[in-house]
Amino acid sequence: MSNNIWVFVQQDDGKIADVSLQLVSKATDLAKDYNKKSGGNAKVEAVLMGDKVKNLAAEVIQYGAEKVFCIEDTRLKNYTPLPYTKVLVELIKEQEPQIILYGATTTGRDVGPRVASALKVGLTADCTELEIGNYESRGESFENILYQIRPAFGGNIVATIVAPEKKPQMATVREGVMKLNNPDPSRKGEIVDVASVVEDSDCLSEIIERVKKEKSVNLTASQIIVSGGMGVGTKEGFDLIADFAKTIGADVAASRAAVDAGFINKDHQVGQTGVTVRPKLYIACGISGAIQHRAGMDESAKIIAVNNDPDAPIFQIAHYGIVGEIGDVIPKLKKAFMAKA
Amino acid sequence: MGLNLVVLVKQVPDTQNITGDAMKEDGTVNRGALPAIFNPEDLYALEAALRVKEEVAGSQVHVITMGPPAAEQVLKESLYRGADTVALITDRKFAGADTLATSYALKCAIEKIGKYDIVFCGRQAIDGDTAQVGPQTAEKLGINQITCVSTIEQIDEDSLIARRSIEGGFEIVKSAYPILVTMTDEGHAPRTSSAIKVMTYKNTKAGDKEIPLWNIDFIGADVEACGLKGSPTKVKKIESVVLKSEELQMVENTDEGINNLMHTLITDHTLG
Ligand SMILES: Cc1cc2nc3c(=O)[nH]c(=O)nc-3n(C[C@H](O)[C@H](O)[C@H](O)COP(=O)(O)OP(=O)(O)OC[C@H]3O[C@@H](n4cnc5c(N)ncnc54)[C@H](O)[C@@H]3O)c2cc1C
Ligand SMILES: Nc1ncnc2c1ncn2[C@@H]1O[C@H](COP(=O)(O)O)[C@@H](O)[C@H]1O
Image 1 (tube, rainbow over the protein chains, first blue to last red):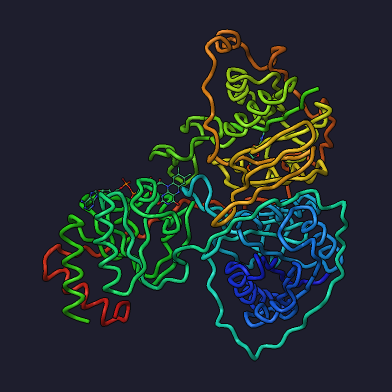
Image 2: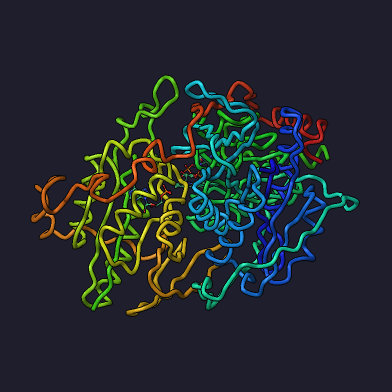
């Protein structure tokens, strides 16, 4: 058995999903930690499949993969469950990695459980942190296994899950949760061609149509975010938020309640059912701080909360709190910024 | 002929409306203090099955849940809405099942029903939010799957066309039977109970012939693959979410207070 750490690299229409590169980055940290603690020699490896995808492997290497297994087959062009599962399961059986990470996307959450079921191994969904550590249970001890840390019960508790007895240990992670390495074009890695095991009889899903539009904003890359909630009051109120954001060079985000109210489109939603962000600064305006919202922004380096209710839960995770009306505080913040910057 | 439709439903604690007293002092969840509800997306799965039944004459809707005896409630609610048969998979030996062991038990139960064409699940259950049981069950049954389905667009005797939500868009996917689909809450709103059916079933209890209890032997499951034994994942530790309020600094809502805040943010290079 090898002790390598794998990432399932998701490509859509010939573009690698951001989350896959974030996971390659995280895998490099895990490998370092594992090797330090165990004295082992775990490598970061990636699996990339699609129609013509070999040209994408270089990018995966830049982020830290030492080896990329490439499987090319026209029947793998778009994701469908059976062919992707078959390719992964066969390769895993042959190579025996110790850890596999998947993005918690509709693709990762479709294929990951099938692979887990086929191999009878564990899979932990939506991890927010991954670590290497020891585990003891009923007199048995396991060294240097994967701690899979995730919120549960609607985000009210954080659980550490382990799957010590069987390899691979597998987890899905949402986009934006893990930090990206700086890509290094000088990095060298091996690209391995793997013959496709897909047969026509595996292709049971026929994709009749596929419609994808680019997101109007990519908040996962934002450094500064001004976010509005129900407290902003109206669609027009969001103009004030957008104007302030523009002044300070920030992107605009929103709570689900604000999105549902039609103040702004869903691409801007932060939280459990929106995007996860970790900017340098997150300014929450008229957001109560429900657990589902916090789940998407509580890793922000600095949080400023503006709310007219001094007891709003958002203040419990904020670094700076301002109690006041949006219509009053935001113009003051803008004025102060223009005077200083 | 008609189609055999199986719906997998779960009773879950209402984690969306957690109040202070639902959390114990030690930070664990006091399940007893949370109302138990029909997993919201499973109601959409049931609705989708009932609609298929209405469209394809002669179809039957079978609802299965695995859980403690109290989970009979979701089966009664399924009967109120129009399920033809229900079954409660319950056995102490299932206790402590993770998604893998759960999907194994569900697979055995589905095969016990016999011939099936479409298995409907919710996309995910709100207690664990894993969205794994559906795909894992499909793999164990050796059948195809379509996850995150908002609506079934077209249906006939041997195949269906579903609209699947993906990031920033959707796919229209066609598959022959047997197929497992997982439903989101974006499609047809679940119907309410029928008054006549409520009258018929309101006194029905688990163990009555309308709500049969299926144990591990009855569904022919291997004990080693069930419950805690069949679960590769273990919970090592549970912590309550600690809010780091001690870091909070209140800023006076005055020109001076806000100017000072801006000064701090600009000098520490957070802004500007
Ligand atoms: C399964 C599930 C998933 C969810 N996913 C998400 C998610 O991804 N993202 C998300 O955000 N939510 C999500 N939610 C919803 C979440 O529970 C909250 O309902 C939502 O975040 C509330 O948004 P809000 O804070 O804008 O609105 P509210 O809770 O209504 O809060 C408005 C706040 O504004 C303040 N306010 C009002 N007027 C003013 C004013 N004039 N000036 C200043 N302050 C003012 C109020 O004091 C209040 O604190 C989810 C819920 C569920 C059940
Ligand atoms: N114990 C169970 N009994 C019946 N169906 C279940 C059970 N657990 C999960 N499911 C089904 O699987 C779906 C996904 O559950 P989960 O993987 O726990 O998020 C649910 O919406 C149900 O349709």
